Length: 136
Image 1 (spheres, rainbow, N blue to C red):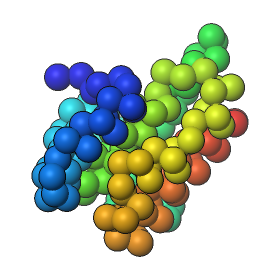
Image 2: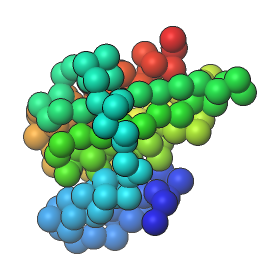
Image 3: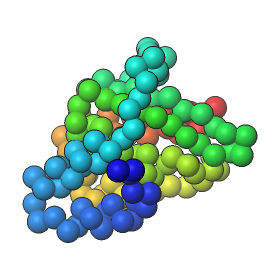
């Protein structure tokens, strides 16, 4: 099943769950929908610094200025966070990347209150990596 492409729909889905255990399960399910990342791309160059879990991210910008990336992690919840980032950023024009209010989305979903500080830092390390890749 492909990832849903609308971050507002995802935020709405999070709101449907009564407790955070169900929301974590949903986040993990989103991570399971991520396409597999080729193990050849899991290099030191693609390794994301600042994450407690192991995370790799590789991106390309098409001639049309559209940003695409693939990422993977060894942790289920982090794969779910990657899925949120794919939904928010992948397939967008490079010029749109800086205008995406990922912090607002993070708060709307409630992740700011329910993720550990380490996971929160890792999430924003991934966001920083995306913005750096888009700018290069």
